[in-house]
Structures are given as structure tokens and as C-alpha cells.
Length: 394
Ligand SMILES: Cc1cc2nc3c(=O)[nH]c(=O)nc-3n(C[C@H](O)[C@H](O)[C@H](O)COP(=O)(O)OP(=O)(O)OC[C@H]3O[C@@H](n4cnc5c(N)ncnc54)[C@H](O)[C@@H]3O)c2cc1C
Figure (cartoon, rainbow, N blue to C red):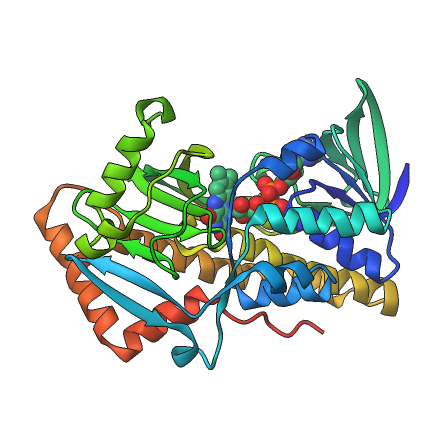
């Protein structure tokens, strides 16, 4: 099998890249290890920066998002039984974020790229390795129906997430990795109940962090910081709701509407970056190259900015025979990646319980008091949260 751009992974990175290239007449084939239903069933991110929302519109998959997504003009930060709001438009020249689930984005992309445009995605066809990535004819070796096959391409996009094979196809001495594991996880519940407040609440509490988020006006997503080795089986729905309410200011806790879980899971928190993001004709994008703790809602949005740079670089190659954007891809994408890694790390440190030291807690609450009481402090949170601008890459 042959194609112009071979894409490993049909998560948001792979599907968005395929869709943008397809709209410009460039052929792609996606290889995905899981089934379509499995990919669609994964419950993950939900806060979309304006840059990503614009990318989805450019990919002509933004109509449902614009109809059903919730525009948020701020977030609330809770500490010391107080609730302080950070206004986005005021501090960012009018920018906002959109609440629209990753599941919905994946559904819209599958619908447009596969069902309507006839884009090729081979599900249950795991890539095993990438070969000859430093030649003009890189190959993806993959498995389908128990047989080994190969996909010969001009370029390979490794969009196969943190555990994928694209990054692992590179010899260790050619890749530098940076990582940090945080000493706790997030226990999350998804439930068909109205959210406690119209905008997200990030809570710093002496018992640990809590987040009140949502997918729609009738579906809520709540998280509480938990032990890194905790198990979902240790938590009944009632125990979850009780603990969430303990960590919120009393007024908000009184407004929490409880319901049965649609889904409950534990997410470990990591920061990870692999450098560079380009090896000859193999390009890494999204979680294949970096992951962030979900505190700043950056994982999915970073996947989108990588695809912004990669899609433009590939278009410049096919339409204008230019290779300079391909050459600059890694450096440009990483500059934005590191800023999001830094913000997610800082925001995680600000809001979570790391130890039992009274000094740690006082430092956190005094920093929160300072940030939320200062226009400059609010601007720092707002401009990072709505997303730093994509660099011009034309
Ligand atoms: C549990 C969880 C919760 C999260 N919550 C948030 C959040 O609240 N906010 C936020 O911003 N981000 C969150 N994220 C991060 C966000 O979901 C990711 O950043 C985003 O999915 C990245 O998209 P991607 O396409 O790069 O990778 P992925 O979505 O991981 O997609 C990679 C795809 O590659 C496939 N694949 C893997 N190996 C192979 C192979 N060998 N061959 C073929 N296909 C392969 C996988 O099956 C998958 O479909 C969360 C992530 C997880 C895991």
C-alpha cells in the first residue's frame, strides 16, 4: 500500500491532520490499532482554546461545535472558602474558550473525514514500527488480520499517543526525553447532572485539589485529587460526591447536584517532552511527543497546535515544493509545547496538595490571594489558559 502521508493513530491529532490534508487534495492513510467504537468511546479532554476551535472551523468540522459548545469567558478559583473569578476577555483582548468534549470532536472528524469524504482509516491495524524514516521512502510496518504489511509513504506522521510506536522507532541516542511524574492522580466522574456553576471551578483545599467541569448544561465532569495508587473500586458514587463537596466553598458545595456515574476513572499526572519532533521524514505530533497534567487543559490543545504547524509544512511542500517549514517544524512546535508544559506544571503546583507542611499550604493560598487580587496576576492565568497564539508559519 502507498500513500503521500502515512498517519499512525486516529486520535484528534491524526484525524485532524488527515482532514486538513484531504481538503487540499493530499492523500493520507491512517493506521489505528483500536476499533472505531473504542476510539470514540474514550472520555478525555473538554476545554478547547480559540486556536483549536479555529482549526476545527478551518477543517470544516466546526458547525456542531459552534451550535452545541459552551463559550466560557472565565474560570473560578476556590481557596480558603472563597471563590474568585478570572475574566478572560478583559485580560486577553476578548479571547474565550469553548467547552466541547474530545469525544464530540472525534465524532465530528470521523463523520466528515471517513463517512462523508471517504478518507481511509484502517482500524484494528496496529503499526509495529517505522522503517527508513531517514530516506525518501519511509515505511510503516503494520498488522492487519494477523498478517504483516507495509505502507510506503512520502512522510510519516506519528500521531499515536504516548504509548505509540513512532517515537519508539527512533534509536534512544537520537532522542532526548524530559519527564516528571506527580505524586497523585485525578479521580474523575462523568454524570448526567447539571454543572454546579456555569464556568469551571478549580479548587485548592487542604484535603487536596478538586475541579468542577462539564461537557454540556446537563452533563458534568468532576475530579478530585487522589492517591497515585488509588483504585476506582475503592470509591462509591456517594463517597466521591461527599469528598468533592468537602473541597468546595460551602456555598458551591450546597449547590452540587449528585447523580450516578456514567464513567469513573483515575488519571495519573505526568509532564513529558521528547525532542526533537522530527526525524528525517518522520514527524511526531500530539501525545506521541509530549504530555501534560490535565490541570491547565492543554493536552488536546497542544495536539492541535502541532497539527497547525505540521499541516502547513506539508502543504508548503506539496503545493510550493518548499522544505523550509518542514525543517522548522520541530523547533517551532516545541517552543509552544514548552510554554504549555511550564504553565501546566506551575498551575498544578499552585492548586494541588503535595505534602502536609503548613508552610506549603500558606504559600499556596497567599499566592492565590495575590494572583486573584492583582490585574497582572489574573492576566497571567487568563492568557495562558485561553492559549498562547500560534506563531505565523507561512
Ligand atoms: C485519561 C485521560 C484524560 C485526559 N484528560 C484531558 C483533559 O481533561 N484535558 C486535556 O486537555 N487533555 C486531556 N487529556 C489529554 C488529551 O486527551 C490528549 O492530549 C489527546 O488525546 C492527544 O491526542 P492525540 O491524537 O495526540 O493522541 P491520542 O488521543 O492518544 O490518540 C492516539 C491514537 O493512536 C492510537 N495508537 C496507539 N498506538 C498505535 C499503533 N501502534 N498503531 C496504530 N495506532 C496506534 C491510539 O489507539 C489512539 O487512537 C487526557 C488524556 C487521558 C489519557
